[in-house]
Length: 431
Image 1 (cartoon, rainbow, N blue to C red):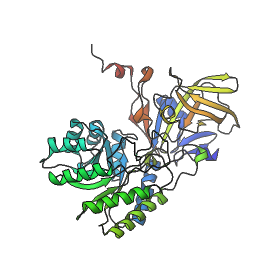
Image 2 (cartoon, helix red, strand yellow):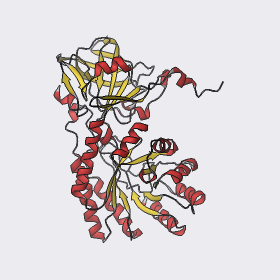
Image 3 (tube, rainbow, N blue to C red):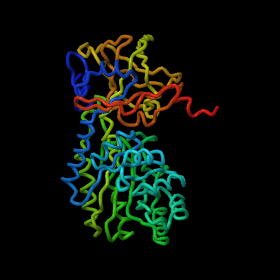
């Protein structure tokens, strides 16, 4: 059981056979706030940021920044927390920009991504952001034609498609291979450089991203080399910015423990950038990392209640009140998870179960074939590593109402998102 506990937030403890996080009893939280319920543990978030900052301070001698990926999960409270940690916030489109602005994130700390930014997205970026990562030549032309000459045009970084893959899901979480929809080929990249020079656009950096939830930093090295070759051709003479993306993995299942080392990831990138710049006579750039899920995934826990137990031959189904509508990752990627009952943790793990939600979709599965203690109808279960790409990709399928979200600290519980209501489902409908 201890290995499974190690997937939960760093404050997770078992007391009197019940699971607690930040000293809060999860049964009490579920009874008070209802289920499905999502919890975010501040101590775990703070610890992850500290690991990244410490590694950068140890291995990179120039300015370096950590960026929070809004797409992992963004709400006002999370955006406000990022500023307590002096993080940049990566926003995709005007919706996430609006959340960041409302939360008080200053212009200097807003960076805008997106593979097909509309004129409205770009207008919001020009108004509120410090940096736009330019994905393609069409987007650069929109910036040139609509916004060149603006007094406060954000810095532009060009997104390179390095054509080098990392080891992760072959279709859905690889972004750096030749057939990816993201970024520019070397030829397109140099054409973008020429356009920036011709129209005096503020080209200040290079970005690439190779994939998400990978564990081996080695494939980053040839992509870094390629990016530095292009930086040499550009001939940056003052401060410039370099971001080799993010996507460093986390353990979702006890078979994947230990989680990959943040320190080794940062060290590998820093050493490659330092050596590569020395070889090419380049000024060391301001280095930016986009940790994504490795900042926020472990901080999150999903609490469900079991409504039915079905035995089908050799298979036992636990049917819960949440699933695909709040966590589509199994349906998208075949993601693996662990799970623990909220109480009765001392029971022998004797049953292989599959856990599914209430929705009319055969892909509405959260976990398949996991060894668990015996769980009965009405029991509460807790699924760890639920902080990234659950709620941000949630839906109202079958009229599902998105769950309440709690922020946990020692001695403090705060509702940071209320549970959606039936009225919320109707408010967009015209009468």
